[in-house]
Amino acid sequence: MHEVGIASSILEASVAETARRPGARLVGIGVRVGVLSGVDVDALRFAFECLVADTDEKDVVFTVESCPRVNRCEQCGHEFDSPASAPFSEAPCPQCQSRQTGFVSGDQLDLKFIEVEEP
Amino acid sequence: MTVVRVEEKVLNENQRIALDLRRRFQENHILCLNFVSSPGSGKTTLLESTLASFRPEERVAVLTGDLQTENDARRLMRYGFPVQQIVTGGVCHLDGKMIERALAKWSLEELDVLLIENVGNLVCPSSYDLGEESKIVLLSVTEGEDKPLKYPSIFHKAALLVLTKIDLLPYVPFDLEAAKANARSVHPEMEILEVSCSTGQGMDAWLEWLRQRVAAAKVLTAAR
Image 1 (cartoon, rainbow over the protein chains, first blue to last red):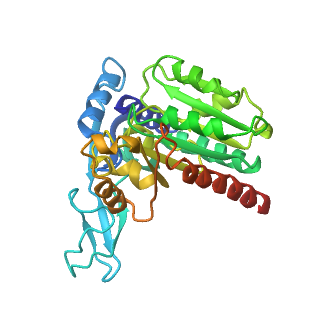
Image 2 (image 1 turned 180 degrees about the horizontal axis):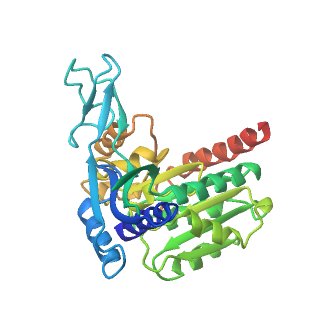
Image 3 (image 1 turned 30 degrees about the vertical axis):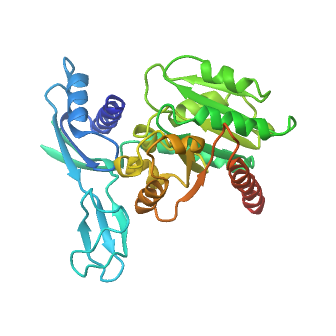
């Protein structure tokens, strides 16, 4: 729902990072989006395309890495992708079947990298 | 072509502002709570009942966010405490900068409690830290009891779930125990209260929760 604002923050941060490198041209952006981040990846891509249309960044390649919800088993330490249908903090461990598992990640919304062409 | 690792939160700027707000709240011994729910779950009504319980000399203030209109601020102003409407003009959540801007009109030294009513939305407000001590999520019994499973992020982040409109339970198919179980499967330590602002049922427990939080904020900040 707020993907335009998020896309705009991503673009701003990427342009600022590029500007720190004299003469560099921004050609790619990589972000990481967790399934629990509240951000819809398709809407984010669409928002990004709309924002860069007719600007110097219109050919920037926008790469999104989608991240699953990850739980860690408190019994055996195994980390695993937990399906959305499983209880949030008690997804059964596929290795030892314990339900004592804790939420580790899945709410990422990170700017991973930018790609630049330097003179 | 050069790849530059950046590795920063997209909402870094908001996080920076939120941390600054949190520091200012703590320095001024203010308890700040961020109320989040779907539209129509009863945030404004709960805040009205809450404000009605405060004595006139108590130092409580409200920020209320909506896409359009000042209707909520008008409702809340009747209780005699400072209220500001934040009209987001289409933005689906409040962010740190909006809170910072609104607070510039008030003196934080004159406040003990700041209640923030977020825009009615269970998705986006969960991504934006406003510097609050806790998020509180409301779920009314006229909604589905599976809301915590559909919107796990906000239920995971909120310290307290307030189930509202419980006077309507006899008339709706809402399964109270299933709703609680769903909330706890997302957030095992979540505190849960049941209230009806119409009949007053459960209001004492909610006000007690709030008073304890206010007192804890005082002790905590005094010790710093």
